[in-house]
Image (cartoon, rainbow, N blue to C red; front, side, top):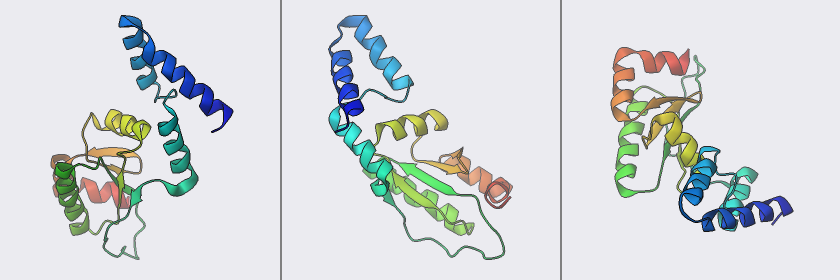
Length: 155
């Protein structure tokens, strides 16, 4: 473990042991800042993810339409049974609209969970197009029906 990660892990241990309101406020501040302080395991997971070995799963996708370029589309979810069903529904909508996508499980990445929940209003699974949150199934259905989804994805 790098020296900086060792310091961050020790600082996290100290923050977790702070009593009462001070401890609660310190933990909330750490969360709001994207969890710069974390335990050794979480920091190791982040290093692994940053090195390109993150838990990214690409599922079956339609062939891209060669006449049009598209923005990147990512479906973020946490590995839970009810979310897997919802992810399948989201990907069905994307496939029906000829959109190539990536499905990413952020179960083991608290920083990614925080960022996605922040940008999606706490909703998971969530669909992002070019870094902008479209939302969950209801928002995706509405965007597809209005033509907004195609416009955002294909420009």
